[in-house]
Every structure is written in C-alpha cells, then in structure tokens.
Image 1: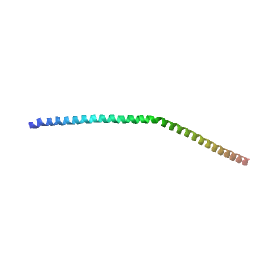
Image 2 (image 1 turned 60 degrees about the horizontal axis):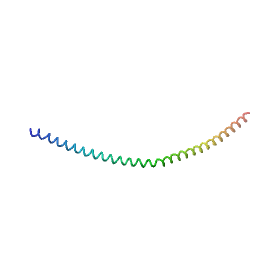
Image 3 (image 1 turned 90 degrees about the vertical axis):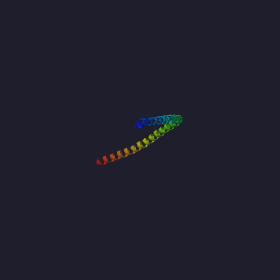
Length: 100
C-alpha cells in the first residue's frame, strides 16, 4: 500500500507536467496562427480601402439614376392624373348639364 502512496503522486505530477508542456506548445502555436491571420486581415483591409473610391462612384451613379427615374415616373403620373381629372370634369359637367 505504501508503494501506491509513493508511486501515484509521481505519476500524477509527471502527467501534469506533460499536459502543461502540451498546453504551452499549443498556446504558442495559437499565437503564431493569430499573428498570421492578423496579417492576412490587414492585407485584405488595405485592398478593400483601395476599392472604396470605386464603390463610392458606383453609389453616386446609382443615386443619380434613381433620381432621374423617379422624376420621369413622377412626370408620367402627373400627366396621367391631369388626363383623369379632365375626364372627370367633363363627365361632371355633362351630368350637371343633363340635370338642368
């Protein structure tokens, strides 16, 4: 029994040393991997920044096109409304003439 009391703590300490070493190695590899990922993200960010001007031009162009199409549609709708109002006025005038 005294053998187990002397031997088991040694085994436990040895396993803890192994787990601690493995944990340190994995931590260092994780830090190295994060540094590489950070470099890639920085590179992608720089490339995206160069495209911001292009995206700004596209955004400006689509806004102007939308404004122009809205004006055209508003013109067509107002023309259509004027025609309908004239027809209603004529119809009301005919009905009032018939009633008299």
